[in-house]
Image 1 (cartoon, rainbow, N blue to C red):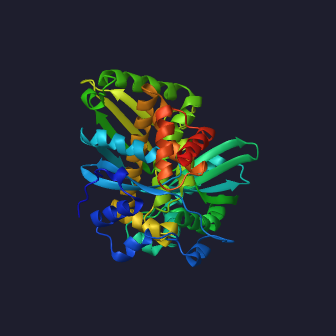
Image 2: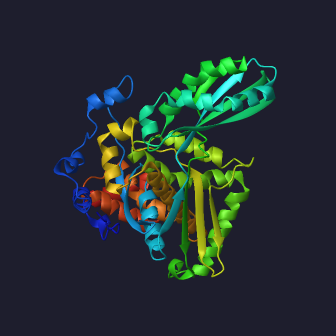
Image 3: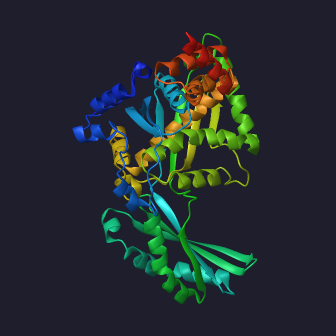
Length: 428
């Protein structure tokens, strides 16, 4: 089934009309359609089984980003997020990108690391070689814990041994299990394997095993996205495409050289990625931790994206970051809306989901850099934020749009001004 990701006049529809449009476009069943037709898609009994001490559920707005074309396939991207302008910016950048072929993506195998910490040793380099000598025995024991994963082609594929000869606690060795987790996020799988091999590791090394846990720096499980935009595509009524490209390159370079700017730059990237991760029931804290650690992998915190100009003068953007996401297990399988989000995207593997998330992050970054290089970040953001301010001021029904339009036109998006405008409307 092929879905057209373009959403003409979507903004003008009511939420119910938008949902009807998406349900029809994605051929959802009546039961799936009903999930978003009323609040409370996550039943309390399910929520009670997901976490401890449940007292209720907390809802976030869920929207859909349109216009995305990834590796030639149109994709509708559900995002769960509270911040205005994120979905609008990503959708608009995707609309520009599709004029020049959309986003091209790739990814590595879904390899996760489990770390086994070994202390109480005096010969760390000897221990290192002893572990490598016992590699086959270690892999066999680790893989005995998950026959289903082995049957799917996954499992523990290798080990790495890292030596810390002079830690404050004495010599320390850390062995990594390298595990192909297939379409799972993999935390439970790799943690179980690490715990299962620990007695054998103590026997081989004569040391004591302490921590046995995954690493969220999933640097072997990377998702990548690339986009190329010509000056013609980027040209606006106020600025030439060439001028915009130079502004984007200056803004990117600032993030590449300065960690203070890079932190905000990368937060903007995660503005696009996190809502995809949340909407699909994945662990956005793990993705965030891995992304920021990866941005520091060369000893200095820097941009997760690169922006360049090719030989024809076109703007080329790329992103590469760890993407430990899954389609099976955890909330991804438990939460009804997470399953629905995956169906809307029509993803077939965890790798594909990670690639789409990377493309959304790249689009979001382009939107921010383009705005910063032209009219500034606040003009578009505050215009969309005006509806929030109208609601805070107490506007209801048609008043919300009327107050928001007035605030945006005046470039004065403040609660006290919204109260004044609302009072004027009601006085009429």
